[in-house]
Length: 637
Image (cartoon, rainbow, N blue to C red; front, side, top):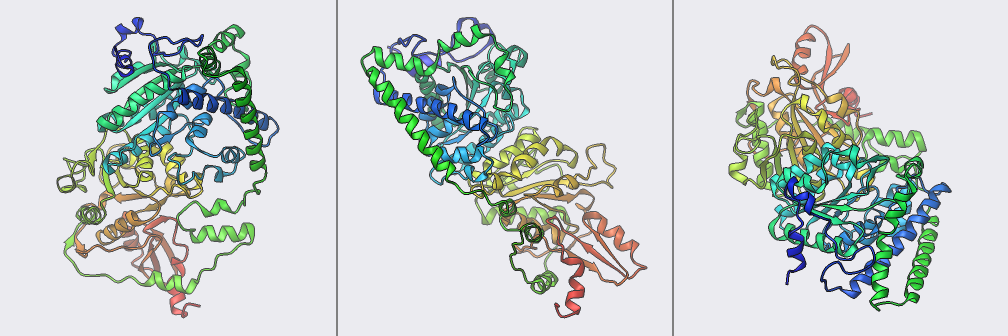
């Protein structure tokens, strides 16, 4: 007799020629009958049924609350309960869920309090301050962008040997995004314990599958990445459960990803912000899918096999409605969010500028001693050491950082065996191994997206993008997720680590090899931006950036990689971020600069009485530095 696992293995999508013979994996058919021999776990079946009933009640109430403007835009999931509940029930408590915006049932099944989901939908980010005992990321609004996060989080489980796996979901529309391709490709290339569930509900808003892809299934997309693809009846909760459990075993034992397509249907509108997508469907199509309803299907099986009586259904519904009433009451009892919180969760500590804005906007003040700040900024003691150029100074810093903190991982394009195109990572892989120093596919978007998951997974990532002009593909992940995750989760997930790349011109580089994209990053709250101007600063600033509790964009002036050598201490040392350096003092004018431009401006100001200030940290900017020398002369007054 074949086991369920053996049967699942026979419906893997291997090649196009097999598709005509393969139907979605199914255990209970549309009439509630067993489609194959299967030992039903009665307790599990009842638990999943009760959860699905409640999540449908939740869905209807959330739509109502959105209509009444008690919550904002809401994405209904009715019809997709089995795909979400069945997959989460197959996970262990320590396994991670990385949801999309429609995964309301999945989040409830994972254990997120219902009142918190409503709180978040009302615009209060504290609703996604995930409880400590729930392994879940805040759900992603941007389609598909959570997939690289999940891949990075799965890599962190692998390297930390936690035995946990990661389940991430997206809709079929998400498979068209670059995030899907780069995230799945990374997961496959690195061999991480990941399950990617595609909830194929037939429409991306109103775009049907035929306009979304030329592939006959979404599961077959797995073939191109060298991972298993499984096609599953997404309205059969037992089939969903067994397929996910099978994929979880592969992930846990073999550290290999699996792509599962769940064929299902969304009854309602895409979101409550628009109604057209649901109204334009043919009624006979909707009616046909309602005959396959996941809740009714399981209900029929339970009743017809004498497992439950009709009264059970009424009791389950009544309990679900009562639970929903209690959850709404808890939600309505929550206090109005304090708008000043917009300043409190952008960085691990509030910057001086944010403190000033907080005071200006709300009259609230956090004390800071200006004299003490000025005194600290002026305390710059140099220590002796060997003479190094910038590339070797950075290399020294990376070696020491990785030696002293085993959580630090270095990754990017050619950073391993090759040591990076500028040799900044030379020798790291030989010393620390290919799990902590690893090459990645040529995909800047996934570099930044994986960064999120690695950090949440307990590692301190250092990512290298080869050139400044290749950062735009990573903008979405950096600006939408890296910079916002702390605020989005109200401090629950504080992303930290460093994204490095060479920048600037003066080296006769081609287009995309001589860019200066710092203005984009410096204008983005939630990240810090650093640009050293000399080997001494480069080492101290890089070490400080890795130890900082925030994500840092570390920009290395490529024209200065081979600068004349200066003395750099052998030991590990830090130059605090947001601490500018007065290179020259004067009385007539103050010149503020950074990176390579420090040198031509020093030369240009040689005949003037000028302050020349090297910012070092471009964001948050050192607002005190232009006045520091004057404060010191005046005794700190």
